[in-house]
Every structure is written in C-alpha cells, then in structure tokens.
Length: 143
Image (cartoon, rainbow, N blue to C red; front, side):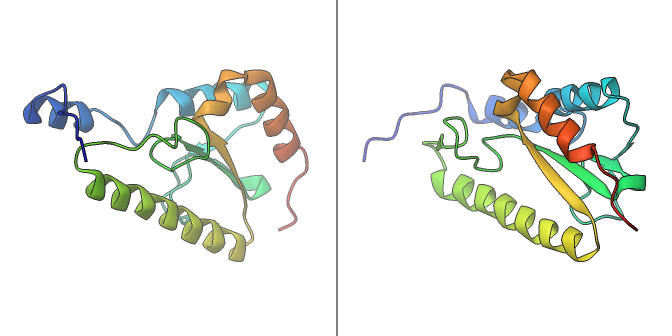
C-alpha cells in the first residue's frame, strides 16, 4: 500500500481542521437566504430537537439539515473522497456522523417532525434547491 504524505505539517493540519465550523457554514447560509427569500421565517439550531437541526420551522414542525458531502458521506463525488492519512480514524468518524444522522431522523419523525436534508453539492444549482425548499415548506404540518 502506497500512502502519500500529507502536504501539511501535523500542526498546520490540526489548525486547518479546527477551522471547520459546525454552525453558520457557507452552505447553511445559502439555504437560509433562499428560505428567507421565499418568505419563510425560521429559528436556528434548536438544541431541544434531536440533532440540533440547522434550520427549524416551528409552526410547520419541519426542519432542515444542511450536510457537507464529505462529512456525512454523500453518494456524490465529494462524499466518496477518502483521506489517505489516518484513514481508519476518518472512516470511523464519518460513519459515526452517518449513524447519528439516521438516529436523529428517526427521533424527529417519532416526535412528529418532518425533515429535509440539503446536501452541499446540491447548492451548485440553487434553482433546484429553491424548488425543493418550496415543495417541502409548502404545506403546514398538522399539530
């Protein structure tokens, strides 16, 4: 097995990884702008809900998660990337994210909430995301 060395030092790689945010990411901000432009009002990161959804529409009992393709192992080319260094650690970490996502989706559904996942790669075609948001948010859930 031929492993390629990381192009960054351990310190630089650690710094780079520490800069990756969980909240207020660029993809999340794009989805917020689109939802706002459609006239929908929302709350952010409601910790009382399973998975602390990125965007919450309380009156409709609907939530949106904005997932990074790499971190949540999307089936697109960006999600299929596998790190060459420390591969076992990264595989376990990413699989943990996927497992936690499924668990949170189930818990939300049991609590009567509907959820939508918007993938980072989908934001390259914002017109499709607008249609997806419009369809998802069009009808109110019955409480």
